[in-house]
Structures are given as C-alpha cells and as structure tokens.
Image (cartoon, rainbow, N blue to C red; front, side, top):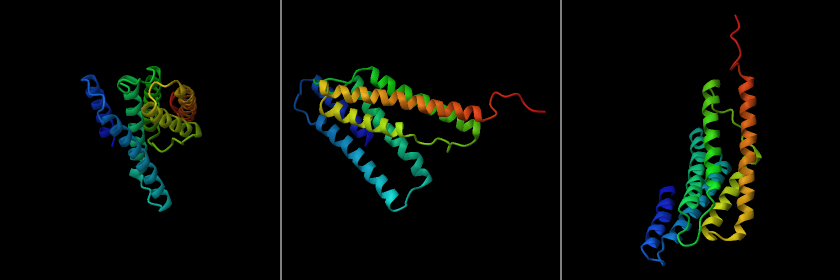
Length: 185
C-alpha cells in the first residue's frame, strides 16, 4: 500500500500543477493510507487473537508500519497536499532523524551483543506512533489548518521524548557490555 499511497499523493500534486483541481488522486491517497493503517491494525489483532505471531512478522510488521508513517510524514512535509498546505519541514526532519538514530543504534548494539532482540518497546514509542498517525491523518484531511497544530506539537514532543528514552536505554546497554573496557589477561 505504501507505493500506492505515495503515488496517489504525488499524482495529485502533478495533476494540480497542470491545472486539474478536481482529480481523484487526493481521495485515493486518503483511502490508500486509511486502508493500509486499518489492515495493519486488523492483521495485528488477528495475529495476537489467534496466536499466529511469527518471528518474521515481528520483524516485518514494524518495518512496514514505519515505512508507511515516514513516507506519509516526508511527503506531507515536502510536497504536501497540493493547493492546501503541508507540514512544517522541522517535523519530517525530526521524525527521520529519530528513526535513523534508533535504527543505527539498534544495529550497532545488536552487532556488539550478537543479539537484536534486546530492544524493549517503551510506552513513549507507542504514544509517539499514535500521534504520528494522527499527524498524517490530519495532514491529509485538514492540510495547513491551524487546528492541527496542537497534535503536531504533541507529536513532536513525544517523538523527541521517545528518542531520549531509547537513547538512554541504548547507553545503558552499551555500558552493560564490555565495550570500551580494557581486555582482562
């Protein structure tokens, strides 16, 4: 769904710039995002309810979620909704920076510990995700509208707070390892 969502939003922009204001790509983008978010929620519920969680699913599901969110946030912060507005640029920069730092840190610590299952979800990460979804939905439904600013600022605050929490967890894990200590003879 991510390529369909991104393509629809970009085609909306292209058609708008060519003077076609009534094109359906805008509504298609909303539908693709909503369908992707809804199907992800249903898929997660089914996996938990029927105990059909898999190791691969635990890896791919968060990647797919993050890909959908980051695509939406980056597109809404750069190209926006044609003729209606876009997110302020600081927001996609914050979100992408946080995710880059967390992925890089996870890969570093996972390589160091030879284990990538040490990351424990924190409630701030879940709240951050909720607010980021709300920002994308509001960015699609009410682009550039001033009523969306409180949600945007709350999302920015939760994104920053969750980054600090995860960085602290990573720092603690780094110091629990033998990294940086002299070799014992």
